[in-house]
Image 1 (cartoon, rainbow, N blue to C red):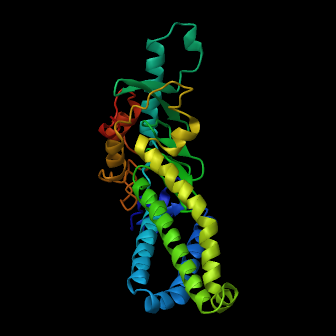
Image 2 (image 1 turned 90 degrees about the horizontal axis):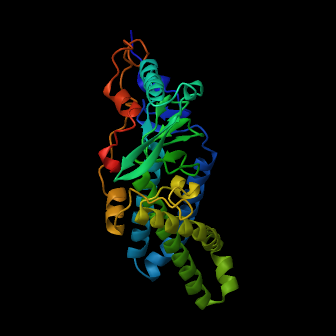
Image 3 (image 1 turned 180 degrees about the vertical axis):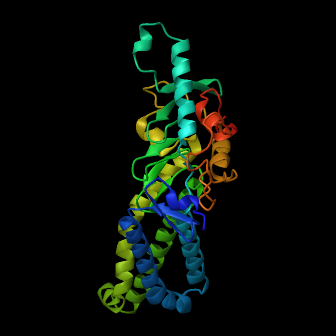
Amino acid sequence: MTKKLKWQVFPGRNRFFCNGRIIIAKSLSLFYLTIFLIFTTCSMFFVFDCPYIFVHISPAIPIIAMILFLFTMSCFFHTAFSDPGIIPRARPDEAAHTEQFIVDQHDNGTTQQQRIRPPPRTKEILVNNIPVKIKYCFTCLMFRPPRASHCSVCDNCVDCFDHHCPWVGNCVGRRNYRYFYMFILSFSLLCIYVLACSLTHLILLSKESNIIEACKESPASVCVFLICFISVWSILGLAGFHTFLTAVNLTTNEDLRGTYSRETGLKNPYSSSIIDNCLNTLCSSTPISLIDARGELSHQDLGQNDISQPNSHTIRMMNPNQVRTSDV
């Protein structure tokens, strides 16, 4: 009998392709729109602007544009198709051990009157001698690691959750943030580059007659210029925002919630120098995928294992006093 693979029974709201090698969100309308806009605009640029620029200015300009385009799309698809850092949900035995741990902690540290109340579902741990609160996820039935959060769109807990980006059709987390950052950075450069080249094309054509005739002669250049001009401001703003977040080692989720804002008075335990923050975020090795999408289902995955034997993943998730070295 053919064994099922883990991606075939994955509980989150995701789609898998290529036998589990590609993971992406189910809602993909903006993802397709992004691809359409980038490919359509760049295709018009390469077909209508580049031949003129190749002959009248330099062959290097279209070549550089093509390299930048390929790099941008490579980062885009890597962000869209990779596991962002999904944390597997607790199996029944793991959830039972976590629940018992919560009850034991509650009974040991409270009075008889306090025991009537439900036990708290948050814990405090120390990260670099700074208290950090970790929360219990009622969907995944586990204590989330520091900086993890549950995505309401994909219905998964994601390690070092930044945000869910509908434009790339995926969550952005620990495993794909660097590719997302390189995508918006290279996309900004591509927009500016194509904008400048299409404008140069129109200016050179206008010298032969006038700007009106130049626009009539190459309407595609006008379309490319307008699309890039409208888009570049928001893309540059996004790139600048994430450059700031990278420099101070914050996630979008933490910034929007004001976790380490001046109002809270809490110090960011993950931030050091700007260089160290950038190296830690962009140059550290990519963690292995925890979901093991192409692995075969075992009895444990089906919840049929002995409840008295929690695995190492369970212990790590249920013990609030243990922190991964990558966050310290």
